[in-house]
Each structure stands twice: as C-alpha cells, then as structure tokens.
Amino acid sequence: MRTLLIARRELAAYLRTFQGYIIIAMVLAVDGLLFNAYALGGVSKRSSEVLSLFFFFSSGTTLVASVFISMRLLAEERQAGTLPLLYSSPVKDHEIVLGKFLSALAFLSLMTLATVFMPLLVMVHGKLSVGHIAAGYLGLLLLGSASLAIGTFGSALARNQVLAAVLSGCMLVALLTCWLLARITEQPLSDVFGALALWNQHFQPFQAGVVHVRDVVYYLLVTYVALFAATRVLEARRWR
Image (cartoon, rainbow, N blue to C red; front, side):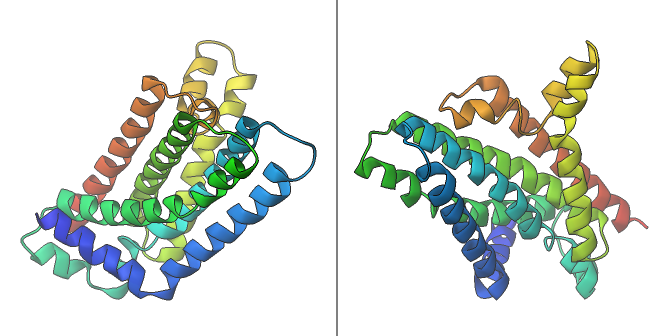
C-alpha cells in the first residue's frame, strides 16, 4: 500500500510538471519523424518490415527517455534535501525504490502506448499481425523497465540529476556495447558478453514479433538486480 502511494505521488509529479510533457512530446516527435522517413519512406516494404523498423527506432527513443525519466527519482530528493524526510518516515527503503520505479514505469508505459497509432497507420494500406504488435510493445516495455531500473540505480548513486543521467547513460552504453566485445572475444567470454548485451541479442526477437522466455527472464533479471542495488545504496546512505 505504501509503495503504491509513493508511486501515485511520483506519477502525479511527472504529470504536473513540464518536464514530463516535454519528454512525451520529444519522443512522439522523434518516433514520428523516423517512422515517416525510414519506415514508410523509400522503397516499397512489406508491412512486417515497416513494423520491425518502427520497433527498432522506438527502442532507441525508449532507452534515451528512460534516462531522463529516471534521473530525478532519487537524485532530486538528495538535491532538494528531502531525502532525510523519507528516511524518517515509516517507509522501508525497498518501498521507496519500488514506488519510485513503478511511477516511472507507469509514465513510460503511457508514453509508449501513445505511439500505437503509428503501427496502426500501416493497416491503411497493408496487413499487420496483432501478435507482432503485441510482441513488439512487450519488448519495448521490458527494455524500458530494465533501463528505468538501471536509471534508478544511477539516481541513487548521484548527488544531482545531471550526474544521475550521466551515470545511467554510461551503464546503459556499457550493456549495449557488450555485443561488440562478444564479436572480438573467444568462447566462453563471447557467449557471456553476448548474453549480457541489453539490446542486440534480446530485443531483436521482439522486434520481429517473436517472444522467447529467455529474453523476458533477462530483462526481468536486469530490472531486479538494478533495483536491488539501488535499495542497498539507499540503505548504506541511511546508516552513514
């Protein structure tokens, strides 16, 4: 119950400020431009190819948006000096972290679902598989969940929002570029780096409309580990 109250309060804070609406507007604008220029433009493509390109571009905007959404979660509390008030309240550290994460995830979900009209436009002149659309959006939400959890961890480490965004961005880039290390290393390291890569190996099946349990488990595991680390950081700061 306390977790949900924190989540509701934080979500209301996103919707009361211009920051939240600016993020939504920028994501919709960039997604729309890329969708029109690359997915719909150029040579004639099959509907499935257009949809796959849409999810490809949307995954990039989801990652960037996750950094800007999550940077304020805990860093803003420290920057404003209100974190001691949270520590003195009868709320546990994991409830604080989970509540703030859920509010960010709810906001990201609203923003992601607001783009659904783009793939539906393809239905005007083509045919789409509902399963492909559902799998793609499931992948976006799982990718966003993992990115937001990493951003929550970065926000717990940082003293201000700018530093939180930098730390979160560095961690995301490190996970994204693991596929490059997988290409230049030998087994078994190449398999390890390939499995750790945030996008290359795990998101592409969703992009193609295929759902693998291993990819769902991977994103949920990254989310859990990052939130667990953020909780431990909060606990360590409490006892300083």
